[in-house]
Image (cartoon, rainbow, N blue to C red; front, side, top):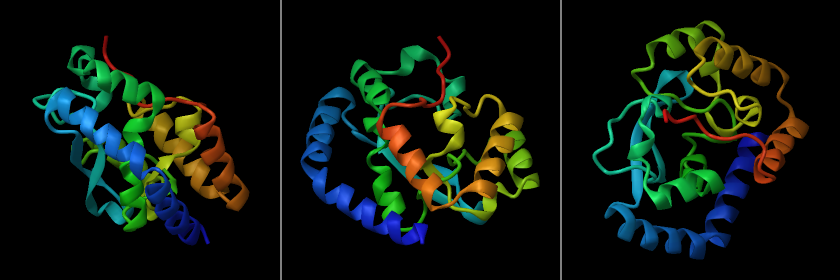
Length: 183
């Protein structure tokens, strides 16, 4: 049932938000010259996919976990995108094509070995990764792999249709944040 919601909401979101997406692409082009960011992430069944986001860091920033990146890599427009969570909007495409769900564990990088081991042991890769979920609204990021994997597993075990909508609405209302950045 959630896959049907994912398709409907992501398609609706892309159509309704297309003027905003277009505007952010134009501003992003002037900010970094490359407004969209694509990065290989680990998805369902540990299958790799290309995650799409609005670029919030310099083009030459290293491809490492966000909590390991220096804050000076973030552009001023990127800071706005992160605080407003608008950097996540292009992931609606990932949801539409089936790489992700609106609700699920945040997809990690293929080189986050400790997190992969923790998530694998708890069955987290049995579901599609998501844009938001229990960890995100509780401000648990990838800098704490064991806690993140435990929280993701708990969400997966308890997730139902009501919970799906709860996580979406709490995220829209501003609960939680993305991965922390080194100062």
